Image (cartoon, rainbow, N blue to C red):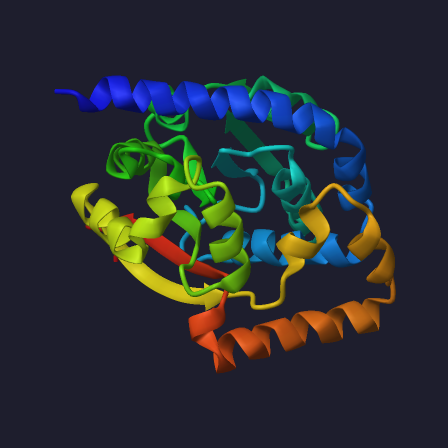
Length: 272
């Protein structure tokens, strides 16, 4: 019976950290949103989510409903808007974050319904069957009880809907270094991918696939506040960006044990 106070203390610690952290990043976020190569990385993430099998099979005359708890400063939310437009689809985007500082930045980058609150609690407030896709990027390892979140996410999915979770891998050098330096915030990361598999199973979800994604240090190089890497790798040449993206995919396939992310796509057990 001691888990809840610990969970609340951890949640408040993270809220306070990110409320201090995000306002300092306003200039960097503007730079990241305008950076073609880094935007291409987020576009690849968004495209993978939007193309996930099922996704509620929305009809062309209805928006695809995407919910992103832990949306942060809106970098991926903005990519969802770009990728939906490229696919000729309208998007009904809902984002949520524990940090008001994060949402303050997201509001300038994303059109949609942005909600303040804990991921599990905000997800629990969604209507049953109200979402086609729920994406959790860098979220599960921040939660003391990821199964509780996933249970609420499963309830909020429309028939045929999908949950897509991107979780950093222990084998990825950049994430391992970063998370060692931020061990209190990232403590569940060190429990590895088995924890996530157990959470999906406990939540009554069937994992449809678990693949590796990305190898190059996009997020290490481009997310940090100093401009140095964004200036060095400032190409806007579509052909060069496409070549770098293709190289990233080849490296993730050829050297999967060093890939950045495990990408879990899951649906309710009854999903065919």
